[in-house]
Image (tube, rainbow, N blue to C red; front, side):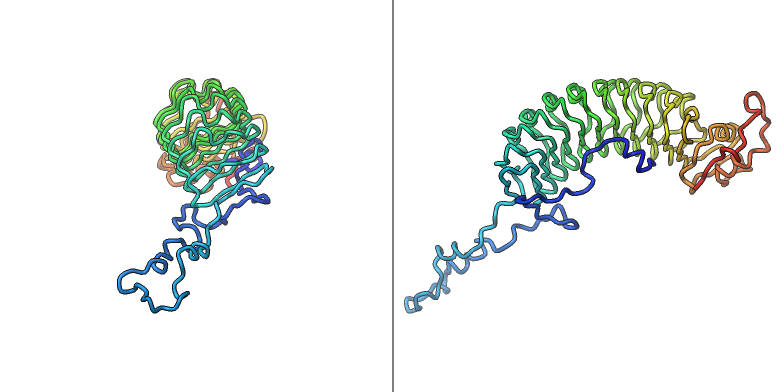
Length: 406
C-alpha cells in the first residue's frame, strides 16, 4: 500500500476530519453518535400534553372544581418548549456545517458569502432544483451519508465556481446526463458508496480540471471505452469494490496525467496487454483482491514510474513486473497467490529486486522442493536446480540489491 508521503503527493478533498463548527452554526451531532439516529427532536412534543388539555369521559371536570385546577389549552401551548429549527444559517458566514440527524430539508437562507457547505449524516432525501441559488461563491459541497436517491439536472448551475463535490454514501443509482455541464472548475468528485450501475460519458465531458474521481463501492459491471477521455488532468481514479469482470481496450485512454489507479476488490480475471499504455505517469497501482490468473507479457512495461504495485490475493502463478525504476526499489505486494517459484520467478525477482511489502502468506505453491517456503527466502538463496543460460548468466548479487521482506 502507498506510504503517507506517496499519498500526500496527490491532492484530495479536505474531508479527512470533521471540520470545526464555526461561530453561529449549529452542528448537533458529536463524534461517536449514530448518524442515523431515529430519535425525534429533544424535549416534549405538544401531543404529550393532550391528555391534560382535553380530558374526556369520566375524567371531565365537575362544575364544582375550583378555577385554575385545569390548565387551558392556550396556556399549555405557551408552556411547551418549541424546538428550534436545526442548523440555522448565520449571516455573513463562509462555512455552513450541519450533521443534525432529523434534518430532512436542505437549509435555506444561506448567505451569499458561503464558500463551503457540509450537510452530512442527516435524513436529507431530496434536493430542489433551486437549493443552491444565491450562492455564487460556493466552492465545496459535502452531502455524504444522507438518503439522496436522485439529483435535479439544474442543481449545480448556480454554483459555477464549485471545486469539491462529495456525495459519498447515498442512494444514487444514476445522475442526470448534464448535471456537470456548468462545473468546469470541479477538481474533486466523490461518488463512493452509492448504487451506480453504469457510467455516462456525458458526466465527464465538461470536467477538464478534475483531479480526483472516486467511484468506489458501487455496482459497476463495466466501464465504457474512452469514457474518461476528457479527463486530461485526472491524477487519481478509484474504481475499487465494484463488479468489474474485465476492462475494455482503451478504457484508460486520455488519462495522460494519472498517477494513482485503484482496482481493488473487483472480479477481474484478465487484462488486455495494452491496458496501461495510455497512463505512463502511473505511480500507484492497486489490483489486489481480484481473480487474475495470469498477466499478459509486458503489460507493465509502459509504467516506468511505478513505485507501488499491489497484486495480493489473486490466482497468479507467474509474475510480470515493470522495468526496474531508476529510483528506489518497487514496493510490491504479491501475497496470497499460488506462486510457481521456479527458475523464471527467481531470475525475475533477482534482476528487478523489488521490496516485498508483505511478509506473511507470500509463499511458493510449486515446485515441490519449494512448496510452502517464503518467496523472498527462495530468491535470496537462489535455485540450485536452475541452469543459467542466455541473459540469465550474470544475475545481480542479492546481497547488494536483495529483496527486503519486513
